[in-house]
Amino acid sequence: MHEVRTRTPIPTASAEQVLAARDALVIDLRTPAEHAEDHVPGALNVPLFDDAERALIGTLYKRASREAAFDEGRRVARARIGELVGAIARAARWRIPPADLEGRLDALCSSGIEALEAGLEPAPVESLPERAVVFHCWRGGLRSRSVVVFVRALGLERAVGLAHGYRGYRRAVIAGLERWQAPAAFVLRGWTGVGKTLVLRELERLRPGWTLDLEALAGHRSSILGRVGLEPCTQKTFESRLLVRIREGFPGPVVFEGESRKIGDAVLPGSVWQALDAGVNVELVAARERRVQVLIEDYLGREANRAELRVQLPFIEERLGSARWGGALVALLDSRRERELVELLLELYYDPLYRHSERGRSYAVTIDSSDPARAAEHVARWIELRLAELST
Image (cartoon, rainbow, N blue to C red; front, side, top):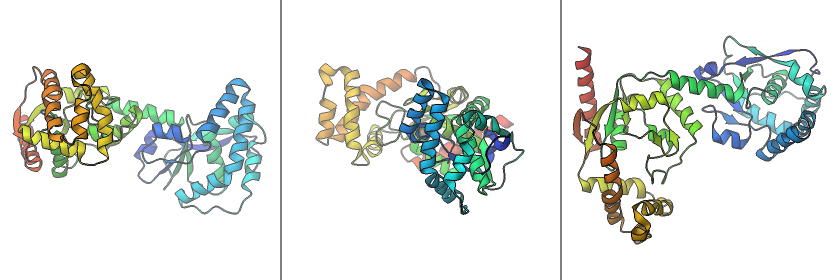
């Protein structure tokens, strides 16, 4: 590759273009830790540096000089350039031509960081090429622009950069969520264990695209024990998942499960919270025996959940008064007296909490949720009748 001394345009796509593309491959060049916190949906992590290397380069940048950090980055990249290009080629289904990869990298970097940064100039594209391979780093800087120019010189002409990198994508996520205007909203509410989630998912099966399953997106059930058996995500990942779902659209209304503003550690964006809070409330009811069974199946359906539940129960014992209940709930779990445990949790913790949170709330209709499939059919028909009435 020729030495970069003049300006080389780097084809660059906006976050909106990338999000709208159906066949683009997004390659995240950031570290594994950066990728794990959040990433463009479907992005493949092919890190230019690992977490420790990135930390060292950052330290050199702050304590020594930009040149020292650049030299360390070049050394690390040179040692793994074959591995990096190979991973890109496999993901992009691209055959690498015979080439001296280390020599090409040396030529690219030979003029130093100032010349390289000045020479690689983002050039917005009007549209993405077919099967585009989109590279990004944290802010669309030297990492991603260098890789784009490198692989394009090797023949991967569908390689483009992501404008402003991950930060540009995050701005697009926030803007997209702020702009969202919900269609007619309906909210399934009811005591813990009535099976709101079961009905919501049956409703999605009956009326595809109607529901917005916030708990599924957050990986949490929105309670103190809500993480048991699930994988809660970060706030940024939650917002990314939420935007993907919103962009898919709603062919009719949007139906939520009743939630507070927080689902675990994930906070609902304002537009989503406003739609949920102002939605028409549908009350789901079920007998106590049914509620107990639903919770047992949900939380203890897998043996592996027991250990996690055992860790979480002391938080509820503390709220109930550790002097009286310290260890009692865990003891019921350990002795496999699950029904007694769930009944106590409902009586002493969940039902009083729900009673307080629902004070003053009104419901447009009440539906028996003992059979989730039948309840979902009832909900769907009722909503359709309600919408028809409103349209006349």
